[in-house]
View (cartoon, rainbow, N blue to C red):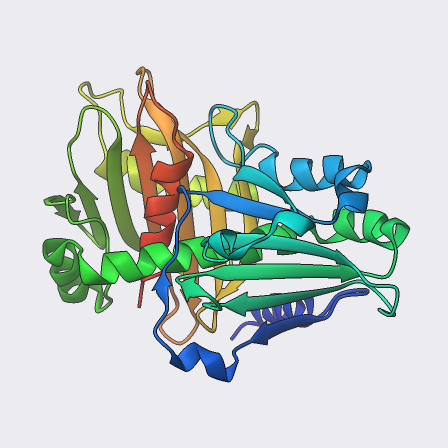
Amino acid sequence: MTRRYATLCRALLLSLVGGVGLALASCQSGKKQRTLVESIGAQSEVLLVAPRQVMQSDVMDTLQQMLAGAAPGLNQVEPFFRVARLNAEAYTRQYTIMHSILMVRLDPKAKEPTIGVTHDDRARPQTILQITAPTLDALRHFLPLHTQLIRDQLLDGQLLARQQQLRRKHSKKVNDEMRRQFGHTICVPEELQFTKTGHDFLWASDKQQERSHNFVCYTLPYTGQPIHEDTCFAHLRDSVMERNIPGSTPRQWMQTVWEGHEPLITTRLRRLEGRVAVEVRGLWEMREGAMGGPFVSLARIDTASRLITICEGFVFSPSTTKRDLVRTMEAALRTWR
């Protein structure tokens, strides 16, 4: 492992295991042995449960913005989550089986704000995130510092549920081709039956005119380049897409959307399924064409074989919303082994 990459991995691990005023716990109790009902709730929905004191304060505006603010990496404004609000006093049994719940508590006995996460408590699949703070003011200062963590925990739970669905029903054709060409496996939506292969390259699509899902996998030599940097990643991606995804004329091919000298993407290091990956979100377009849309990628570096492997999901849906389409492909990427 190169020194640069090892340093990045250590920094990522430190960021994942702790933070100022943060205690993140995963809870599994003995009662999970009983049979659980299927959870309910709309796609990308979160139930926000808070006491009246919080509901009637400016902190509720912060919570609303944290959950329903714009989702990143899309070419139109869509909320990160759909949010349903509920006063804590009205939190009765019918709401306890929602698939994603954010519970906010004020406890004067608490020494500092904490976050705890519970999975499959009253239903399956289910993620319950509980934020406890000693005072309203402590909660007010705590939330902005941990927005990304709170979003990640809730979204990871929702993506996990979609991963389970994909493992039960997915494109065997794509999985077989991934195994043959790269020695990996992945569960993409069953509808992705049309494939194109190239040198160290695989493209699969459902060829839908509207709401189209696409999957791409390719490898590149690892020369120590900082692929976690936006510009570096975009140049690597564009070099592959130009060769493998052409348009209808010789001057057309897929490329990353650039604004001046900067690509419209965001990159960050993630630890997923015990492995470090570079997560990339951004926009693609057909050069000198009218097509375009969002994409999400995971890149992994194998320092032993000196290879970068990149798996990407991109969508084309010009007349509909795209957040949930992208999340379907994001869940598929999380099944990559």
